[in-house]
View 1: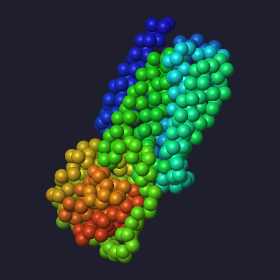
View 2 (view 1 turned 90 degrees about the horizontal axis):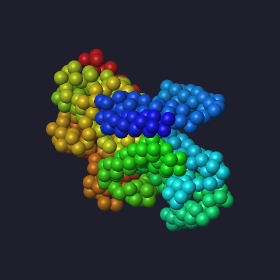
View 3 (view 1 turned 180 degrees about the vertical axis):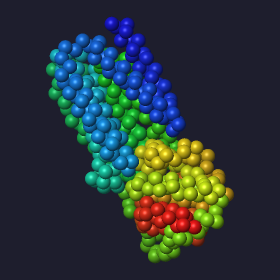
View 4 (view 1 turned 30 degrees about the vertical axis):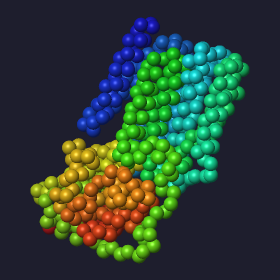
Length: 460
């Protein structure tokens, strides 16, 4: 049986690797999900058989309850809520690792193996608990149940450092007395839970894509540590894959923002209200344009680049956006979408949103590949984006956005921005682009505004 188990684990691991590779492209992402799901199914089934479980009652009950919850979530959760769901799933993965590792300790009557197992057990409890509470805070920020702005207090970094040191000390004490060390483990879980909260509350909404990918990495690392506790190879491999890919994705997000991970975790971007709509106290006026004005500009254009942002998701305007694209293409206008790596509230948020509306993958172009094309584009249509197009990132050294690569929409012949107001983005920085002479501000709900434009174009 051991040979069969290892062979099935190997097959599952290969499927995980292939699935992860295919997730790297929108065209093969669905296939990658299937590979990964089949791999996980094989791993679960062979584990249950290998452990020679006598009573499957609780396992079947958990399977049914979890399946129902998952099916309902998949059907009911809107695209605007996808980041929140990902944050929740990260948290559930973390707490599951904590529970499994602690249960293994209790099940073996408080007897554990050598130093490697002790360290793995402590790490599993630490990382898993931090992941759970940190993910819950991220969820509440994204859901609007608590402020999306950073929450900071004096000595916060030092306090977090003390909590981390405390877990290390408790882990050492547990290693000295594993038989009677249950109290130490419970203390580690409690302190780690607090650390998860205090580590995420100072992170603002502008950095949520980085936080989500980092928490995803944490959940993988917790699973890998639990795998060492259980001596389960497939759990070690799958956890390591998630942990490594999450760290890589986090680094990609940081590079896209031209910031270090330490800057994201400790800089508290968005603490101040910034210039807001007043531009630092100076009253500035913009001209309000209408759907008729926008339709007229489109009629005389040859190329359009659309820049989607979180506002597009909030308005659920992706389907009418696709309809607008099709109308423009029927008129011979070249249309593409410019995708900034940190647009939205999670990595790949805009890609997923537009895929739901059946926008062709070849229409989605990454920032590096399309940025030079704005200068030869007739219209740059911005829907719900703000910080990723803010020119302050280029020159304003005291801005939290300074140095972050942005989409060069201001280089287009005409810029259309659909937005509810002149309010600043999550970074709290007023956007000078709103006041440029070549910018058309179309105020209102994105879905309604796009619908009006589509209606006018259809009538002409």
